[in-house]
Image (cartoon, rainbow, N blue to C red):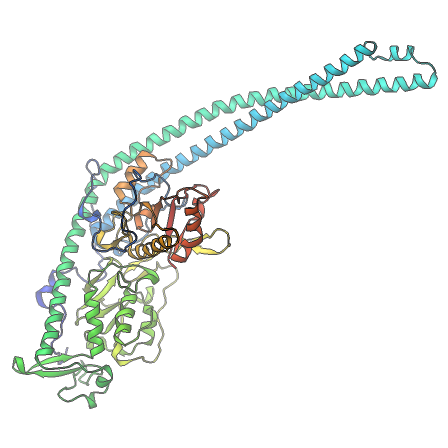
Length: 633
């Protein structure tokens, strides 16, 4: 680098204590051993700092969490994200182990489901066969009564109404012929009814035999279901033992990483404040961006800052610092300083995926850039690809604090953006770390380009697009595709729960990446928590009370315990949307179909980004009126 003035990023040995170049590729093999899971560890602690207020008092304790599927039947699949999408290599190793466990428990769950389906089918056939037998018996009884009545009537008249008696009583040829026809008709009808009754009786006897056979089969299926459930319970107990060491190792790695990251953030804040103090002591008032765009017409006292090629850079300047013997001091536009200051204030706040991260509680990478620069008066588009397409580029070797750094590689498209702090580090809402953090600049092959917001829009350029077949990377992590489900009543297609997000496995998300919802210790992904709080306030305005929740984010050990207790009902551990912090189980009347509370949710929840999945509705296969998922607005 040429002619570098003082810049306020993390410097010197501080960089060596950090997490390494992004993205991190190393994978460390773990060992799967030990005893039961008793994991009230720091990684799974209840969040206290990040709270989206919903109601002042927690509802009456409803008891243990409901045992339910949490996901659509058959929807639970192992996490497909590659190792580099996770926050730490130990976390990636844990996920590999969890995937193996999920596949095995998934196979057991399928066997349980199959046995349960066969049991239901056998019982249904048994019920139908019994109904047919009873119907045949009733028909036989009715026919016997009819025959008895006919015979009784004929006997009272003059005995059996045979042809001889009728013929002997005839008074003439016409009456004789008529009597003969009547007798034949009555006898034929009686014979047909008797034959039909006997056929129905045989059918009834066969139905009764079939019912008996199906009853035995149903009993066998029930025993099979019990056996499969016992197998799953025993395997879940073994899983608790096998995953104890990998979870503990991953927890330790995450705790160390978070401690390291917190120190890095602290030093960055200190260095930035020291830079601002130096400007103030030197009597330098940062000029507006427009004043620094032409190096030939800089404000008095400012000199051009030359780039790596020796030419003066646009959008920045330098000045002598009389307080330090004439050292050169970097001068940034006021809007850039305001934007970077706001971004530094956001360090440590949670990351959220997709379109939901524009603050102030949580951010996505491009949402953070959009928020801090738009607030500072240098509007930026909402998505990283548009920011890249419209920004005015500067050479990578001339990167300055406040410049936007875009990451790929190209086969993933423009999937990440950060705010440069110096020539080696940047600040970004990171999808792997699930937080706003200081990270290294992208390396060769990953760095796509640098733009300078203070220079305004540049000439639009081609934006790299994600290659076909590639996973969707965003903000340094992998974002899995949305599922869809039909919203009841309207026939519209709504996104399903987002599933995997951040650089952590299902049920092992750090408390710092979640937000409380203002009800007891319940927590969700931060955008879901904010939306729930708003929905609860709306419910309180309409009904006088906030919404009631019995379960929210569910840790992996809690999922294992639920599966162990009710393997035929609970989701396979590591697949529940509760484990992603985007599902809730509700009370206060919502837990029952047809109540006023449930109708209120059906009418109003979609406006806040919450849906009742189709599989959980009446007739949907797993009726769970209490289960609702956040899909975004």
